[in-house]
Image (tube, rainbow over all chains, first blue to last red; front, side):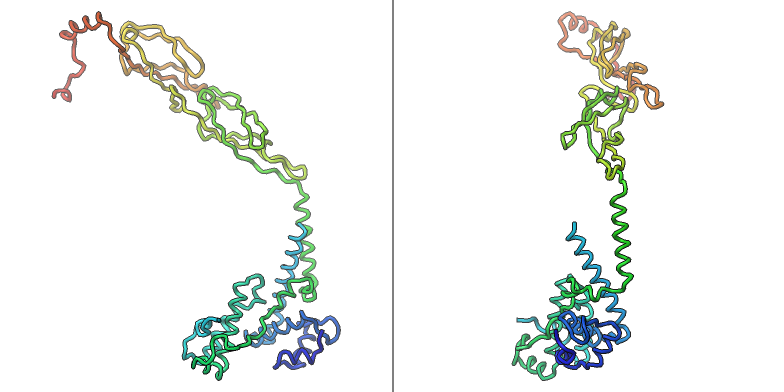
Length: 85
Length: 299
């Protein structure tokens, strides 16, 4: 669990405004306030990869993340199913 | 030690920083492990590509590498690999679980699944092969087929079946699910060859050996047929190769088809001639006509 300052320090060119905007847009959903867990840290790493390395652009981010979320939701469900059987 | 970073990125030694950046982005896009969960080979590729890029995108370190001062690993600390997928794949990922109606989609899916698995379903058909004796294929019979599980099936063979014909035993396949009907047993027939009889459509043929005396004088003889022994009268002066047709004694009438015939081809068998016959023939040879007459035989 880390604060927004620590989060931004971990990814050097990351501004707190970026993080707050992502939270506002629902791309990032910290459990409570501005305290971030490990999954959020890794999601920030993914968002930065998508935006900077893959040149995705802020507008495309929600689309890609939405699709990824569906893929992972399907994978979790699939795993839960195979566990049941 | 890591592979040559130029090879990893697929760029030339003198590639410009822009080329390197372009090559890296292309490979990173294709192999980003968070975009391709469950594909470890892409993950390894992505790590190699990232490390190569970290080395070559830094002009100072690239110069040192080119000068041989550092190796491809270059005391290099590759950026930590992305591992969002590990969380997203776990239960923690539910926080980013997609839209609310997504759950409805699953609810629908599971409901359909449950409905489908509760619905009555017909059992599977099962295929078997059964070899039957030749007479059974002609006359029809009742054969017993032992299934792999030890169960036996009574198979009624209709008259006149052909090799490869498939008989269907309704309801003798796999049991149905949830009170669904059972599947069928499909039995493909093989017919064992017979030492004497040959099948020719609806007819049956074989070669009937007769003695010289029977051929010349005629005789009443008992012959075997698929439907049992039969008495036939051989006319006098029958010749070798001559055919005798016994109407209706072939494959019995079945399925709207008329009964076939039994066709006997005579073959005169001399055996060991007795002296009297030899003596007679010696005289006869001088007067008897040769069967080889006509242009083709003029040698």
